[in-house]
Image (cartoon, rainbow, N blue to C red):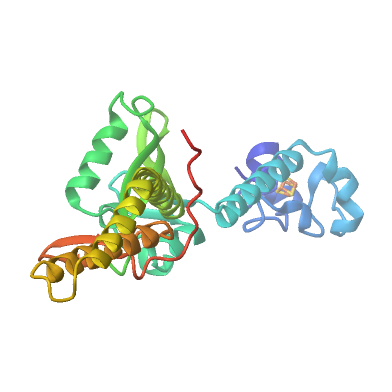
Length: 297
Ligand code: SF4
């Protein structure tokens, strides 16, 4: 609304009092910023500069309303610009009309190539995914008709890679008519990475716990096996036909002992290829770590 519409002063071009009292210098370009225009005709008198008339402007309802409105618009604009969460707005047809800096960063696209040119469908990983999200936005699920509350989906960066996000969105209405929607896209990559790392840690801990249990139960019988095999070897003459077999037993038992000692030092799940598509733990390349000895039963 312009000041002459609000005050009905009649001093705008073609206004009721323009011919008689003159056209106000606020006309035609400063209808919402008349306070900054020197020599306006408010109150039936020619006003001075901004500094001279600020007191009377401060008591003007129109000035107060426009100040609040402009300040609120400025805040909204700054919030969108500074918000660390990506905000994308679309018109009723899905054309992108708002694309804040966080969205530029997330999707690797410059807003000048997006605003008024690209459809929101292109931001998702497929047309089917975009259709599904639109349907959900109008359905009673995930927050009720007209909104989405924290739906996990994926968007596609300009480089083509999918990015997991959490989406909040709502439909915009004006006079009861749908005019568009706004979506808030929260990047989930760091959270997903942390979750995967936690799962890996838990898996590793399970393996280490199992290895600790195996060590505990095998240590004593293996020690007996090692000493008995070595005693047996001492008793078998060099030329005895069984000498070779006993030596093989001693070698095997020592290999088992060495292997168990390596298991006791494993702290990572490094694997090595074994028999085609199978991977097994690579004890030689796993990082050294001391397994806490299990308490004696
Ligand atoms: S500045 Fe005052 S006098 Fe001039 S057009 Fe606006 S309301 Fe009317």
